[in-house]
Amino acid sequence: MNQTGVLTGISVSHASASIDEIESAGTESVRGTVSDLLARPGVEEAFAIRTCNRSEAYVVTDHVTRGYDALESFAPDVRDGAIRRLDHEGSLRHLMRVAAGLESLVLGEDQIIGQVREAFEAARAAGGIGPVLEDAVTKAIHVGERARTETAINEGVVSLGSAAVDLADRRLDLADATALVVGAGEMSTLAARALDDTDVSRIHVANRTVPHAEHVAAEVDTEATALPLADLARVLPRADLLVTATGSPEPIVDPTDLADAGKTVCIDIARPRDVDPAAESVDGVTLYDIDALESVTSRTREQREAEAQAVEGMIDEELDRLLESFKRRRADDAIATMYESADRVKARELEEAFAKLDAQGGLNEDQRETVEALADALVGQLLAAPTKSLREAAGEDDLTTIQTAMRLFDPEFDAPVPRGAGADETRSPNTGGSPEGPSDGVPNEASD
Image 1: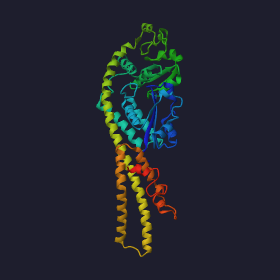
Image 2: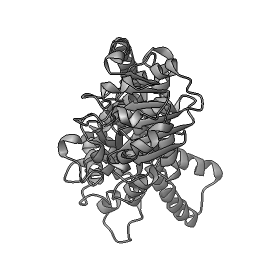
Image 3: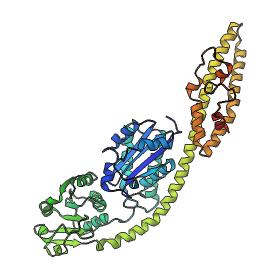
Image 4: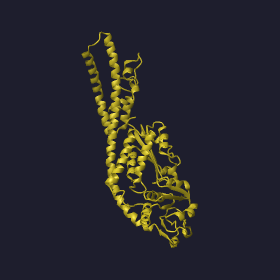
């Protein structure tokens, strides 16, 4: 596996796709997606990440077009407008933005960097991580860590979901409490994640579509249960905290549903409201709506957006370093292949020459060393110009020239030529027999 491969990516995320579209992309597991991608023609490496808000896949191939072909069936049921396709540099930058939290629902959220790490290890276990993705994902994680230690991108409460939990934590003791989250969209998911960072003992997630509720429940480490909206009346009396965020046009919780709830904090972050305002009249019930939270989150959001500019500059800097590293390694890889191929030819020709000379009386040790030194010098001088050209090609990001060199100096090209072949054929086995190179000018492309 070499460093000349290019990275190609595809993203289906909350930015433009629905929950159903995100869930339909790829397979249910990172390992399954990676294994599937590795089985496709031309794919050398593969990586995938899957959360409730994004499903993405990346492959390393010899050309970006082949990468797009390999990813074609990743999201067959997703609208084209909801799919983002990424070339080599775009994939590298996007991975850094994801790990830094710039692509998250909540700008700068912390959870995503752990999810990138987990996906990286799952992809490695499936055999998908090679030199290109090793550097790409490791760099993305490094950028994510820098963003959180060198800026304030993750400070303060910025989402309504996390703000709701922050408010609840100040209004009641969440230790060993039972929380009920209603809805399975963006805000409900963020609320469930925020609750997961508290001391609640159990989280119920209720939604009209139960599989969506199950997906949210799977996002948290706290004991969580998914249930249909029809079970609300049964579960509400046991809940200490209710957070609602559905898209229902009508209230889904009324005063009678809370009649036996006792002391309960209800935080309604839906528009229109999920909880009938009259519910506040129920003894023991405290009701907060979206207006109580928005002023807090808007201030924090503005602060994080300012910090995001610093993170963008950090990404530009780290991306330049990574691209330069890839360029150097591509050149080194091609040059190493070229010299290895030349050394095989040299060793074969020396062996044949020494055999003939031995039949003619032989050489002493000094004479053999002189012949070997001559062969080494010829190889060095003949390859000096191509070496310089390959380094220049890497500096100019001329991947075509580097890949051409890799093909030209593939071991198959210096295989022994059958006896009886013409001198021109012996010297140019991959050409049309011309000692000046192939008729399509490929060697000249590699050295010009």
